[in-house]
Image (cartoon, rainbow, N blue to C red; front, side, top):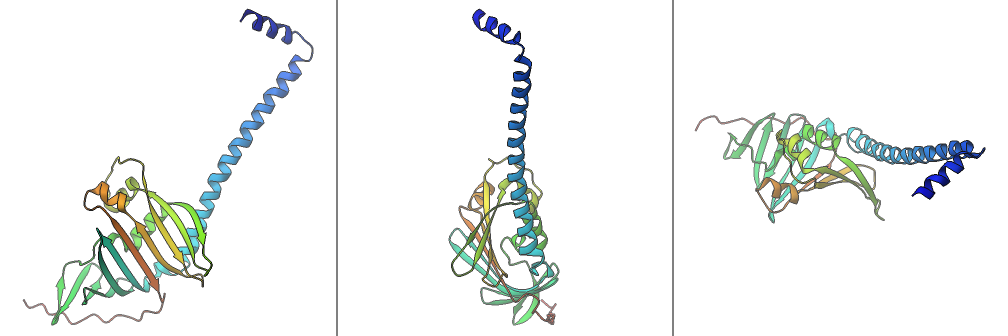
Length: 236
């Protein structure tokens, strides 16, 4: 140890020692600068990819216009629940279990000989809600893109179970930092055709199921005509 200290002192006494130290300092400094720029660049790249995806896949595609046909499939512990219908802003007309339903804002009606007010038949309605979808995608991380030979493109997003729970139910949780996967599908014409949520981990944490997958398919944006509100029978 004493020899090392003596060697350092002898080096510092040499006339070129200051120049070596000066250039060595700046060499290390620029190494850290390049590492930082690379890290920020990768982060910005992900951010730009996400922002590009969010803008092109949702806002410009007409999804948030609230005018389209949809097929909403919920596979809960292996059982399929299928809702097929059309949305016209705050109104919807759809079928579930071969029964006709109509939704006007937050009120649901069911056709059973006559139209009568009923409860919400949707499982996990929050995942089809456009405001919730906007929140989910705005807080998701863009992860990757897969292009297929038939021209279909899938964009993969990740969101943590804690964030999802907060956005959907306004509950703070401290689950393990595990993310669920969201796939956004673009058809070969560049149109948004579907969103798939893989929610097994989320439903296990919530302790209401073992497996949960939600598939949303969209088509015919802007082609839904005004829905006619059914004549409701209020007699019971």
